[in-house]
Image (cartoon, rainbow, N blue to C red; front, top):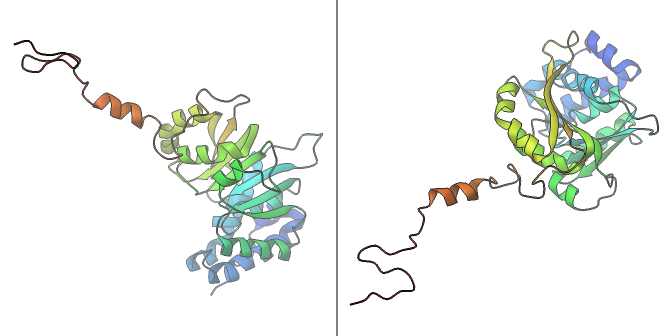
Length: 271
């Protein structure tokens, strides 16, 4: 099993005085992370560029906290091995980060990492699914929702928007890390995202000049008021909301009057 290698120069620029914590996190990913199946064995040699730096530059588009608040609340949905939540927390000490993960074995790893890095005052681990957390009052979850929700490779865009919307406060932000097909994905999903209640939908890039390939992020802001039809089932929550209408339109209309040889309903045929 190979290690993560030496930290590249960009790591020092991004993590600053927390570089030693980032190095230790990379070591945990390359050892326990691989052993427990959270990181693929082939990823060890490219942990810095492909994972840590790729996630750390997300800090560029996370808003600054308001002057009347001590920290911005961020939820990392489907955190897995702690990406992007932990690199984001290391770069931005002004964030209060919740790592939301449904699988127990991953939560155990995350809890150990948070303790090992001494981040317990800034980072919390919460086991659960986003829809359940959004529906049920949960300790550690802001009553009005998180300021920012981040996600990396969790679900298709429209479905992801439906998952994250209930977790984010009004005027809160969704940041979804995507691959090179993000523009094509957005072309298909924009209408659905806007109908769910997201606006200012755009693709931004982070890390230019710091990472070999800049990170692509879909950024959306939750509307200050509920979108029209927001209480209805959204696409991505399960069955498409327009399927019922489509099926109804596809069915032939039942005749209201009988044909030559068929009496109309409720009438008797004269003889």
